[in-house]
Length: 242
Ligand SMILES: Nc1ncnc2c1ncn2[C@@H]1O[C@H](COP(=O)(O)OP(=O)(O)OP(=O)(O)O)[C@@H](O)[C@H]1O
Ligand SMILES: [Mg+2]
Image 1 (cartoon, protein in one colour):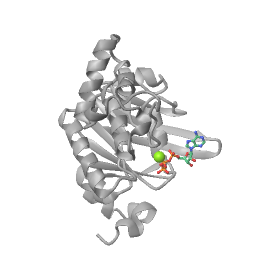
Image 2 (image 1 turned 60 degrees about the horizontal axis):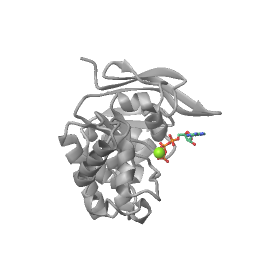
Image 3 (image 1 turned 45 degrees about the vertical axis):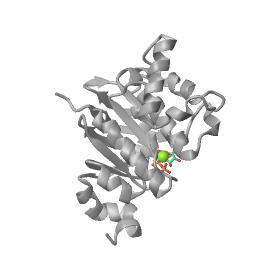
């Protein structure tokens, strides 16, 4: 059996900037993988390639053994990949329920079915009471949940969470952690980008660390935080005291 996701020697640049260079790692079904690294390391670019929004210049990404890279967002969604955005993207004039129906329509054709699916995802993410509100009225933590609900409505096997907990209060972040654990408990594999190590490390099974577009470390959370290359590139005074 191949790993659920295989990223193999993937490279992508923008003009002169090498955003991802020969990036390789695998993710097993049921894992929570943390993707960490300093600003500009290439984390969101990697998510954009896994979700099919941009194509690698070289290398290949496989989902359950099938090549998905370069085939576009719809093919990636059909292969079971969903994502949230670092900069929240809701349709502000639509209701919360309608926003989540957009995700459901990736998979189901009938409006009534999409509505029922969306309502179930709002219940699962704690947003049921906000179903009829315009998305613009949601608080920042609610908007993060809406992103998750819309992604879940596509019924993914793999979800990519890009700084879903960033900017939240500690209490809101802990609610987010509980949501991520609940998502994994449903059998959905998670890759998450998060800068707050105190939140990330207890949650993840393994980490991949990027710096300047390259993988500089991978392994258990304990191993990567002790890795001298990781401390030098990223953690520094952020975590060195621990
Ligand atoms: N569409 C684009 N056009 C030009 N340059 C880009 C584009 N997308 C990313 N880059 C560049 O690629 C590099 C990696 O960016 P990316 O957004 O992937 O980093 P990141 O690890 O997500 O950073 P952050 O932690 O700040 O979100 C950066 O130098 C960025 O400026
Ligand atoms: Mg980013």
